[in-house]
Each structure stands twice: as structure tokens, then as C-alpha cells.
Length: 499
Ligand SMILES: Cc1cc2nc3c(=O)[nH]c(=O)nc-3n(C[C@H](O)[C@H](O)[C@H](O)COP(=O)(O)OP(=O)(O)OC[C@H]3O[C@@H](n4cnc5c(N)ncnc54)[C@H](O)[C@@H]3O)c2cc1C
Image (cartoon, rainbow, N blue to C red):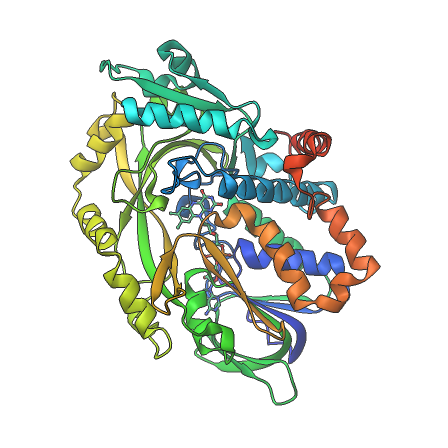
């Protein structure tokens, strides 16, 4: 569909760059908090939610850190399992569930089944050491009320009940173990994004521009920011003024952040990692599996490469994916340019970028090995999880592009981060989102964190405070200590989201 070209509105309160899940979430929150606010959304593609947020480009996990083993590292100091990060992610996901429930109650989105389903989350490991780890992890996790209900077993017939596909023809007698959390979810973030952007587009004071690339933002002489754009269909350049700019351009946010004249951009760099899935073509296998089964990343591999065998619901159809396999690409977006990485080198991030590169040689080696994998090699990895996997039942599917954050560490060298990071200018007039994990699942909590920094006065006002509470009653509450509130919010969101 070719969209009509809409002229830029010369002045708006807010400019959202990119129409992915992050801009969609922030835009809707702002409009709820202040119905009079004016917003322009700029998207370089001709549809919203088609980059990382699209269902085929991410794993669709509602990251609550139930079973993703990379969120519970072993502490080097005493060998204990650190569950702090998992607890934070889990609470942030409750905020997303509350915000999405609010959207459902307001009829802003269609039937929740169009974007979220309950799919049990499982961890599955083999070998004595890993079994020991999982047992210890389960004991530690279930001390926290957030993770109560998580089941642990080493019993093969129990695992077979939870995940028959994983156990079919599993002849090895190596010890195995699994944990299961029935309340896990699969989320179609692309569909949710498109519904939110459509809703925003229908609201007064909101204009959504497609095929428009934002190539720079500069301080405007009358205050605020000059947003400089180019129409990708006819090459015509135009600009407008915005009081507040959110850079939600996914992997490409880094470029725009580097061009924005704010002190906070300094030292940031990025390292792109591409992804691939094995997509199942055999309906019998797809039907047999109903879970998201997370394994343990192999030694030397980055945390986001934890393999998983995933039931997905994409466009109303059940799918089965395995991966992600990592790859190296110099693009910052799936639809980006091979020059993206080179373009991101600046004087202020040269040292962090080079030093992060040098101290992550094992990651580079891992990526090179991944790039060289053949279809047969990939199916062999899959067979560790699905012993009955055959070459002809699986095909490659390209996933989205992640840009891992590189930033200065205390020693002013560089370190590679695997999380999501919000950067806000000191005057609060620009915010940018870098990184990809836990990403989309925690979009609502990320935006709740950004709002008081960018709209400090309004955020303190009673009207905003009560609206914020209405959108996410658990924001600011430590759910690990509030058993009845946790139970109440889970029960409400389970009902509203029809899980
Ligand atoms: C392989 C993979 C697996 C993942 N798995 C999960 C998961 O299981 N669960 C989870 O919660 N998260 C997951 N993530 C992360 C999640 O996908 C991202 O955190 C989230 O989609 C980011 O949303 P966004 O809106 O910031 O970016 P995007 O969805 O990428 O949107 C950015 C938009 O900005 C547009 N844009 C870019 N540059 C410009 C410009 N200059 N001008 C105008 N428009 C521009 C792009 O076209 C795009 O539409 C995964 C990511 C990947 C890559």
C-alpha cells in the first residue's frame, strides 16, 4: 500500500522517531496523560512495527525472567545464583501486563488474543552440572513470591508431559531436569504496535508520517528541537519544531543520538548482532509442542544467544521456531545499510568501541563460527532439544537486528552491555532508547521511568499521578513484598488479557 504524503505540522509538543513498540507505548501514555498534547510520529518504512518489533524479528517472549537462564547468573564471588535482575524484569513485565489491560479496558486494542497468549515457559538442561544449577536456581527463585508456582523435576515422564516434542526419541540416559512456569506468555509485539499506532493516528493532535526518514535533530533557535526529515519516496526535505523528542528508532537510535547535541550522547557506541531462526514446516511437530523451552547458552556465547524451542502465535497461526542463531552484519536495522557500523564511530566513542572490541574477542570468534554454520550444523544443534528434528522439516527465517550497547566503564575504556538503556538529556527534552534485552516486554516500565525525567513538573501533578496509577497500579510498588497485591494484579491481568 502506498500511503498519502502528509505535510509536516510545523510545531508539535512531541516528536517520536520510529513507529516501533517503544514510540507507540510512549505516545499512547502521553496522550492519556494529556489529551491536548500534540504528537508527530516519523517512520521510515511504510508500516509501523516492521523492524525489531515485528513478530518474525523477535522471539515474542513476554520476558518475566521465569525460565530464561541468562537472567540469573552465578556470582563469581561465592558461586550463589543472583536473582536480582530476574526479579526486576519480572516486576517490569507486570507493569506491561497492567498497561495492556488498561488498553483493553479502554477498547484501544482489539481482542487481546490478537497479541498475547498464555504459553508455559520451561527451562530444560542436561548433564550433572547443569541439573545441579537448575535445582539450585529453582530453590532460590521460589523463595521470591514472584516465582512461586514454578515447578522443578528430573522425572522424564513429567518432562514428557510438559514438552513431549523435547522427549520424543530422547534415548540418552544423561541426567536431565526442567522447570515449568505455567503463566508464561507469547506476545506478538508487532501486532500490538500496529494496533497502538492505529489508535494514536485516530486521536486528535496526532499525525503519523510514513516513508519519512529523520536524519538529524538540532537545537531550534526558538527553543526545543528542529527535527530534520527526508521523504524517502520523493527525496524532499522538510523540518519541524518539537518541544520534546523521543528517539525510538531501534538499532538506528544510536546514529541519531550521536548527532543530537547533548552531552549525554558521549561515549556511547554499538555492536550489531543479527539473528536467524529455524522455522518448522511440519504441522505435526508444530502441533505437538506447546511451550517456550529455554536452554543454557553454550560456553563463550553471548547471553542473548540462549537457544529456545518456541511455540509462537503469528497472525493467528501456530508456529514453531528454534534459535536464535547469531550472525554478524554491519547493519543497525534489518533494512539498514552496510555502512551503519562505520558511520557510528565518532571521536567520543572511538576508545570505548575499540576497547570493547578487544575485550570481546571470544564474542567475535563465536559470531564468526555462527556465520559459518550450515543448515545441517544448525539442525544438529536443534536435535539436542528436539531429537526427532530432520533437515527437511526446518527452514531458515531471518530475525531482527540487535545493536548491543557499548559505553564507557569506570576506567573510561569500553564495555559491551546486553541490556536496554534509556538515555535522557539533562533538560529532559530528548530521550533515546538503546539496546534490545529484555526490550519490548518491558516497554511500559521503561516509559514510566522516562516520563518523570522528561516531564518533571507534570509528572508530580495530581492529575498525572492518578492517571499513572490507573495505567499501572503496581508502578513504584515492590511486589516482592506485597503478596496480596501481586495476586490481585496477576488475577486481574489474566482475566483482562484472557490468558
Ligand atoms: C532476535 C531478537 C529477538 C528478540 N526477542 C525478544 C523477546 O523475545 N522479547 C522481547 O521483549 N524483546 C525481544 N527482542 C527485543 C525487541 O524486539 C526490541 O526491544 C523492540 O522491538 C524494540 O522496539 P523499538 O520500538 O525500540 O524498535 P523497532 O521495533 O526496531 O522500531 C524502530 C522503528 O524506527 C524506524 N526508524 C529507524 N530509523 C529511523 C529514522 N531515522 N527515521 C524514521 N524512522 C526510523 C524503523 O523503521 C522502525 O520501524 C528481540 C530482538 C531481536 C532482534
